Length: 125
Image (cartoon, rainbow, N blue to C red; front, top):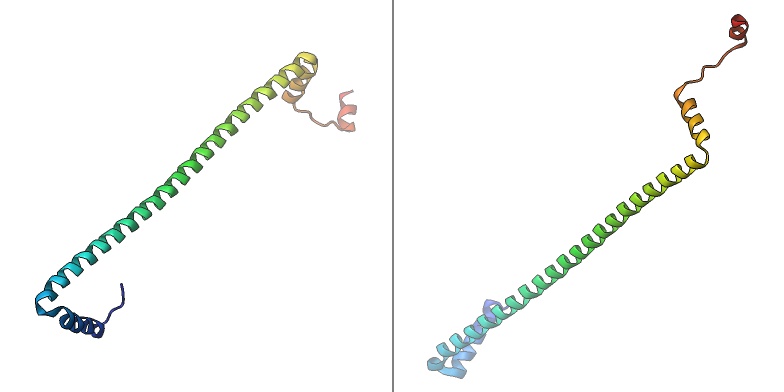
């Protein structure tokens, strides 16, 4: 975390022993280690909360995108249905205006036309 080597720790221990003395040094080490532990836990809690919030924001964004996509799909389906209804109505109107044209179309579509040649026409006569 702080990249402190053995030499630095030894210097800090010797200075602590000289400044605090042998009676107060163990208590100071315990107090310092308690505060360092509390700081680490606090930082870890803050980091995990931030990660959860970032993850929650990402999930919210995905849910929002999925709801938009579902809405677009629903709109597409309704537009397709309306278009189908409109095209059926147009065909019905065309049939009501020109009923004989629709009958002729269906008659021509059912019977395939065969090409005739001059030889066949002369043979038939």
